[in-house]
Length: 414
Image (cartoon, rainbow, N blue to C red; front, side, top):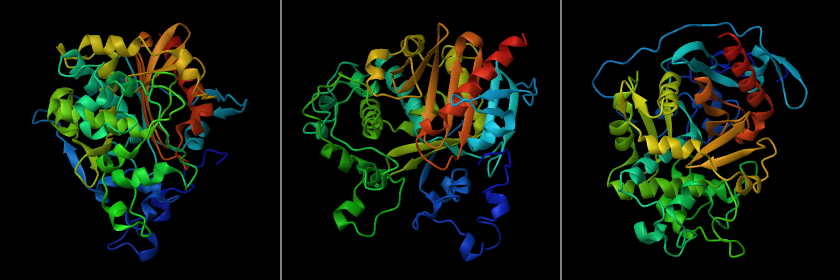
């Protein structure tokens, strides 16, 4: 899309899942894979709890805490992409298929807008941006002495003794420094990632799979992920989906509690959330990705920006926040050759942007889910989207310059 026409492929205008019942041609179902087809996913990402099994992240019984408003106009902002194209504010949002965007400055909402099938009370899937939340839980367990960062994974999960994780440390999993023989390319339908995805419960079963493959959960697949014998752990950053699920297994095993309950008890009941969140579940009941309203997603970002403190209560240990913002090793990150992410690093399941002498933490998920935290400039940007292709790098040429223009406008208005 090369203009700011938000009606193109809009699920409301297209009539997806409208009517009682919707006509057959406009029904979206998980089993038929139509939920992940284009443009149906523009509706699905805001309605996954209607299509797949989920478990709620309870917000608690207390009242929500309203976020204060100090709205500003961004219509005058022009974005120059890294490819040299000049876009208006609306064009930048449209070309990256934003479903919602909130900008917080010093805890106040200065911009909030929703598009497509998303609204203020809609729980939108955040895809792999969830890994950063699980990273915070894991690091909190380490800070509390309930998990050893240098422990070998197989001592916690013996089921992984003969896998790529048999001689890997917990910290290497957290920092995505695992050597594995695993083909992960979301643009390749033959990639191993798709069988893995089916095991996580996030994709429907392939009717051509045998009975054993059709019934496997992610814990059945992970032991079969093997190490790359030509490279040791810790040699290079490599973003691989199995790491996220191994970390989730570690967190459940170490705490003796599911991720959903840990997130609720540690954070969600204490940040004034407006709504319960949810986790998608695999066939064994293990969590995969999660969904939240955009405001609550932003509230989590604000908690991290404030050093893990909310209303005077330390919800995330300060040592965890410090460890994350110290960042990872840029030289190890550079070996992954992300052309759109120069001078970045990776730490504890967070992408770390090193820019102009400061470090920003970024949670990133497929199809354009982003939580951007810039403590030095008191800035949090929460975004959900439905970009047609999965890799988040597909929108970097527009979205990263957009972040920079947001920062310049906010800091220039002080």
